[in-house]
Image 1 (cartoon, helix red, strand yellow):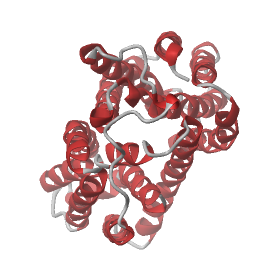
Image 2 (cartoon, rainbow, N blue to C red):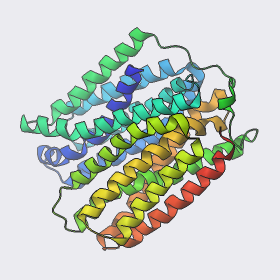
Image 3 (cartoon, one colour):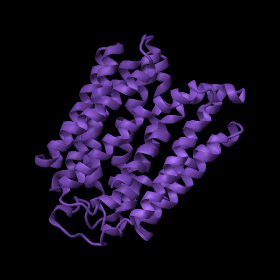
Image 4 (spheres, rainbow, N blue to C red):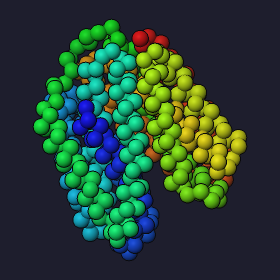
Length: 377
């Protein structure tokens, strides 16, 4: 399990590492920020497109082989990023890194399927969320450290080395096989889409897109919102507030998951998200955006880990890695579209419109998840 957490932490760290290095990259290659920023979008695109493939491979050949192969691709891409000669290669290599680290989501989900009862699975996902939030905080520290040493390249070399070590740990540990191909316990009864695979896939994709638009899109808009309000705080401060919200709430979540059912957990996360979005819409300002970030981090912990625990069970056991991968892929692509469509509104000063709409969407997402979860036990 520790190797799985390392893999998830490294994938999240790699995701967050490039943003603080953009100015140094543009200076080193004598180009503009917009060109190197394309690498961030390419990373998300590679991850979103590769997720269904890794989900199929994990279901077909087992999570161990899928995880090791993907991490090797990611390590090679990180080595290439450290040695990258220019922006064109940078975009290609970032796409490959995103595609490689995409293997973590379906592989980890399939490993955690072997945990029972459901409360144990959710506590495992909560611990994983804590680890990834900590890695998001550590990434800017690593970026700042290597920049002080005079070069951005060692940052990606560190990721490459740690990823290769993680592959060796997974190989040496010889993880157990994928969970059996059949439902085994009462807590594993799928939701209302049982027996209707088309409806089940539609539900997984729809909930993934809705969660991505709200739970990933709104936090991504906090930094641009802070920048356009002319606040004195660093835009990275709001991201740290979000990560701290995730960290602190997951400690509480592990206790609540022992005694609360999935509907109560979903309602708590959804109402917290609605409160954060509406607060940012009604009371603009730097301090309020910091509070909003913490509330959205709390909402992510409760809502996302509950969906991680239960949503794949809308599909039969042989397709649950695919369910996890499709859920994540639709979330990533929807969040990217949300940010692209709403950034211009923030630049026009229409913060209240953006966050009020986010609050309404979060309320709708919460109602939808509660409806789907009506038969989860």
